[in-house]
Length: 199
Image (cartoon, rainbow, N blue to C red):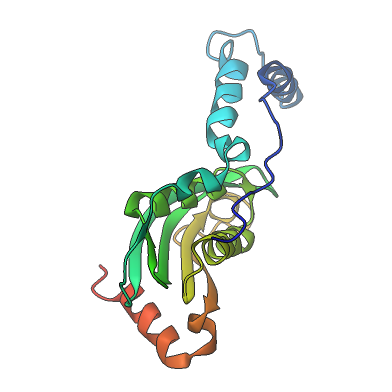
């Protein structure tokens, strides 16, 4: 197996510091942090960030314990894995679905672990392009398959409810590794599987 370690910062969420910052934001926008509806808002926001960014304190390698030796030589694909992440540019969510495929080389990963790996990388301050690459690179390095393909489709609230305000726009990113990058027929096969019979 390839090197499974991933450098994770030793972070505990400083909820008290977040609470103070949120209180300052409320004051800055002209609100009264002491009014009934806002009194608990700083604490709620602190707990929210701890939850949404939990992946910053998780190691994706923890999900590699369910690797099985299996002589399966066709594509393994888990489609439409729901995920959410936080855009690092505006601290607003982007929400979508991940499609993750690999062509095994004698080892397969427990199916739920693919979804957990997506979540671990998604629940961090991210940009979608980097998130897509991180998932693909992690699987290629640690599962050592013949190829990996990752496609993410997501709606970004930083452009649907602010700025250009284009609700319904979906951003698609892909990361192809190994045979799926080198071989056009293999690439076409995996991308077709990802999008066949979808409503």
